[in-house]
Length: 238
Image (cartoon, rainbow, N blue to C red; front, side, top):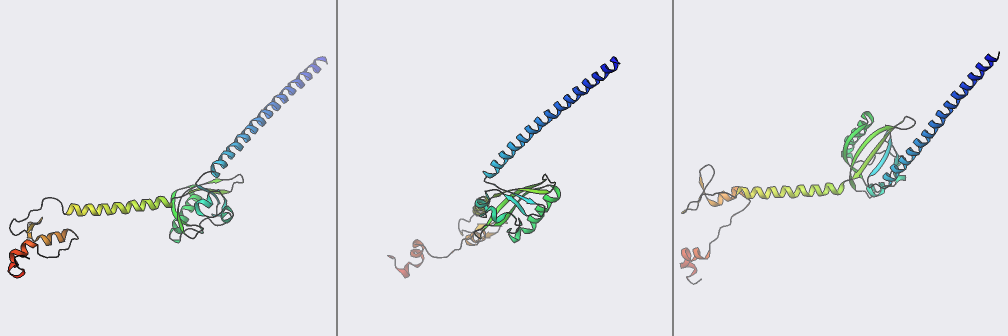
């Protein structure tokens, strides 16, 4: 009988030890979970601070393309406040000429999870058009609903400077082309002053220059030729 009580006591002690071990594991898991929540909260705080102080426009859309959240940079980038953007369709102010391509880009994000950087015109609150360059990716929130995170940058000035540089480059190339056309060795007759073209024909200097430039000749007489050929008319002393 005493042996049975001893066995029961040992079993109870073993069960208590197992219970304490499990309680310890639960407490450790709770501490790890609290630490994870703390790290997540700190990470979210850093993310919010980064987004709110970024010059880029950060927005969140639902699966249908309606704005659910937007960063404070919206007014500086496009003139519209948060209150004027949240709840509105994200593409309603996209330029008509860019709407199809921008709609396709949004559909790509929904279907594939990400879309390559896309540039389009967006109507500023002042009525003008600004160029936005947007990158977007999709994710699932805590409820499992699809959300789209978009990062946009106003690149209007950059595109304007690029167009100016391209125009200046074209002008430079055109000017260099004119220089190249009239450069090089030009055979000219010592007596009649005709020039020989690339095909071996002798042509007047006026025709050659006119064909290879925008110059236009107007004929006149220099003073020396005027005296030599028409001295008897104008007078030797004129």
